[in-house]
Image (cartoon, rainbow, N blue to C red; front, side, top):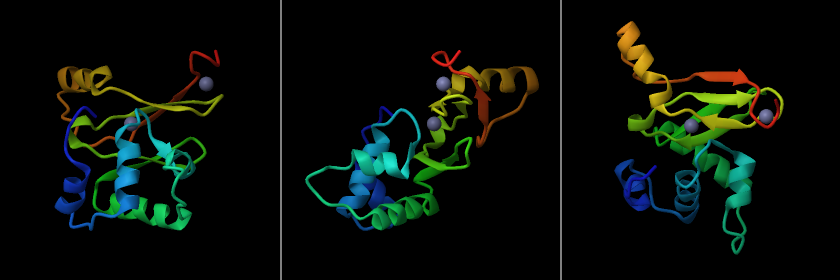
Length: 136
Ligand SMILES: [Zn+2]
Ligand SMILES: [Zn+2]
């Protein structure tokens, strides 16, 4: 996510009031290179403030509703969250042993779908399962 869009502008453009929890959650998701669970987000929140788990959960729900955040289901059907950027819609891979999830770059599959199948990708909900390097 190399863009410099200001977080408060993201909120305002979706008719959401700028609150500390919304800004914090956006900041955490923006700096992550993989989808995060609710508890991973809780762990990354600024420790100098006491955060309410329910507020953070509700914030994530609002972001999904406003299409700022996309929910990604893991192998055990737990929900992970990542910023939804239509420019970087992508599939995920997850390890059957350790459960870790990683983002695939569009370059890793989009070309094949467009060139050999003439298929234009609009949205992606693929989770590819396998064994990661560390678990092999
Ligand atoms: Zn693994
Ligand atoms: Zn991703």
